[in-house]
Image (cartoon, one colour):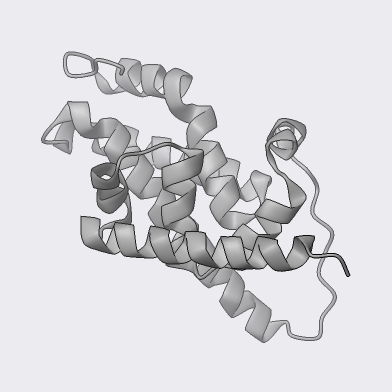
Length: 174
């Protein structure tokens, strides 16, 4: 854990960036399915943290603030995509240009599991990504998603059941 309480905003955000940037990009990329947008969202979360540094009640909770910010910004980006998709229905999408970290993130993805994960409802996907890809505790997941611990357990259990079912059908001999 990075000790941040005594630092000014520049030093604290720099240390948090060095320690947690990649894991936060991984969270956003798994939620968004778009590494370039994930990087932008995480960078925006750090800029937001820097701007609000003096207003933080507990500087030791800065990482939790960043995680919650990344999850919330990812949700907003997904909602924005849905609106754009409705208004551009029938239009041909532009090809995505991969980011510099795309290759590193791509190595983490296993096609069948990621496809099944992407098919889950948003809350189940978020709970599973935060639990199994980021290895957060239930309390931290609840805080990041702004739901109760019981809801985290429920979303995680339902998501895992759906993943098992989905992966069982994709692996059956055809």
